[in-house]
Length: 305
Length: 241
Image (cartoon, rainbow over all chains, first blue to last red; front, side):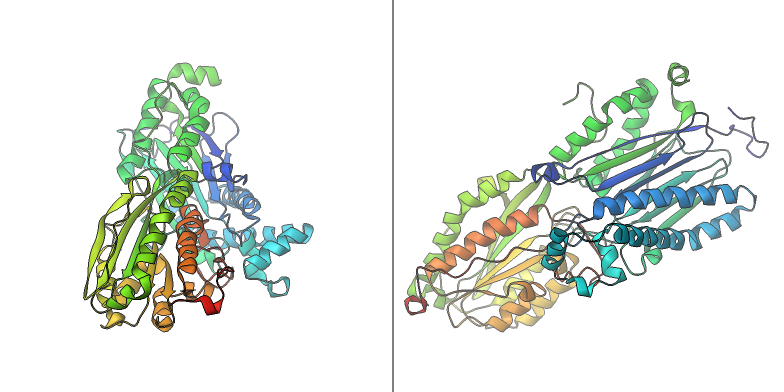
């Protein structure tokens, strides 16, 4: 653990861990379709005082036949862009400046860099014959392909959470969910949600001005840190009939970590998500969990060490 | 699946509301149209149940509205397809389609519709022209989020059906498939079977799509398959309606 920061009188700077999993949806399983979700996180090392987690949900429709690649590139881009942002932001203590850069510059950077990755991928991997057929079935000809319709082939959402010693930053483009759980087990939904996102329609990185559609939340962290952050694709929330049923995931996971340890989550997460997809939405489900390491039982930390 | 309790509350498949909106005006009683519709829907139920069974992640819930002189819920409770039984419609009166639209609009708000429902499937079946102001009822539907996002299809029975009105009901789906023209019992049976199986299949596990229209070339939020070709057994001269 690092030395106690003088500006944080009640709590030392916490260490963070991340776990997560992504499972192919029951309906995709029935139709032999690959998982279109992706997840990526940092840190990979122990004793880190930051955590960065991103999930993405590829649309998977007829016009988005490369969305599994689109979602993978989305989480890679998010990891690169947000890591760089975090490192640069360490050079200033001006949290207002960090907040304004996060809100004003990051969505554009994420969108532009994802687009760039898509163009590079398309140049390296031109559309195959069967993909051209899919394009035609979606109402487009190769000749109609412009920059926007190219990216539509890879259409994906993006949800990211970054926690540092002094702030937490959440970004969301498209459907899915980010929840914060407090020490007391209270589950909070920090982003307001977009009422336009229902009936399988979502904002997407493939939209022409996707950067304008990001929702962001910047929280200054001083003496109270979140206990858990849960970031998931919409297949998870859609598996529960009511918000309350879904929000219970937050306090249940906190209880499991406290009583049975993080290994129990690691060992069972894939099974739980698969069960949720089978009995619920049928969609691909991805869940990433950022957890404060001091909530884990001491034996667990020793085992990890 | 696991010996330890998974996190979260109850899990549930997503509701898929399917609503028949049936013209029961007096003209539907001519040449056995209403009985053909009754037969077609009743005969489609087992296939519909089999289709629904293939996708346990959608809970298909059936209802029906009848309209003639006024409009009423013929089957008012969303009924799971596995328990669904068709009660015969009878024909009498005028064609108050607008009242049926207004009745439908009341049920497309959230609640009673669930936010996490799948886009509902609304199927209008008619053989004539509306006798009331259908426009205001249709406007109510189109102003509702679930009204806009619903899969709206129509079956025209006979040559006197008002295609323009049916197209307006279908909205963006009119560009995809147009009103399905049934000129005989065989056509009607095929189209009822198609909406009850192929459309349900697609609507029960639709892919996500981007909100913005245009870039992906999409015109509807739930792409549906092509309808069946008209019956080969009966040529135009065999049309009865």
